[in-house]
Length: 383
Image (cartoon, rainbow, N blue to C red; front, side):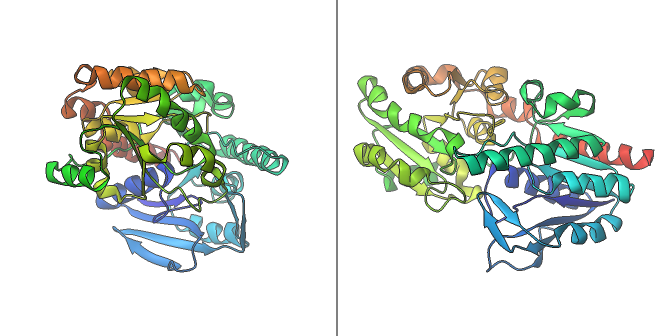
């Protein structure tokens, strides 16, 4: 089967969306399918075309970017040429071109169109960003109208999403593909030594510094956690400076300076080393504040590494802790509740940890890939 995948950013960009798309594309290629990814040429040093793990990656030129969107003249005509050469069109949303892509694929090219809906878009405050939000929503709805099927992460998120709730009959729920090697004990020890975390309780965070991630509430939890656990260290993995469309790092400098002795910023950690990061943490926090976070892949990755979680009570985000019992769910935008959840897990950690096999059985990457493969095949046959 020839599968065309479209999304705004692809590797080496790191986000839950790109990791999901890469894992799926790579797995489909391993299963013998011809997979092409059409994405943006968001960094000048990247090649316009390359083969990555058996996947043909084509990066379309970017004229300029505003906020998190890329302006790419000629992208749709480029997509039209590729769509005609493929059997199935798979569009990852949010994507500015999502609506027109679905229209071209379904109406003009008569090809099956599948959407994977990763999250509702909710950009930082500002009139300009509100306009972008509305435009993105309109494009998403247009894509939903023309798509054959829409894949959502969870029923919980699908029911609560303003976009997905409009297309209940088209929804197929699949957990995201999760892959995480077990931690290496020596590497974990070296990491804790490097960041002076030995003898401390370690609170982890794994995400780029973006508005929806709730970093300010995480920072405000520090003195509250220290009331019960004085010897605590917060390890933060992920890009914190220069995040496209964000100024969280700059805005939070007063808090960062105030709590600097308890913080260690690791920057972007290679995916193959994330298991060791999670292995070094006593608890992972996911303090997200809005529906731009729909699941939190890092939660399951942490659980596979033996690390329980504290996540906020958002649709989809609360799912991993609820279905596994390997964590606590706390109210959003509440530093005290977050701190109480952290302390509760730290004080009763053994109660939360589940066997790796139990987590892997529930969140099976292979099952997700097979479900996609079946969906694509069924839609292709119905044409």
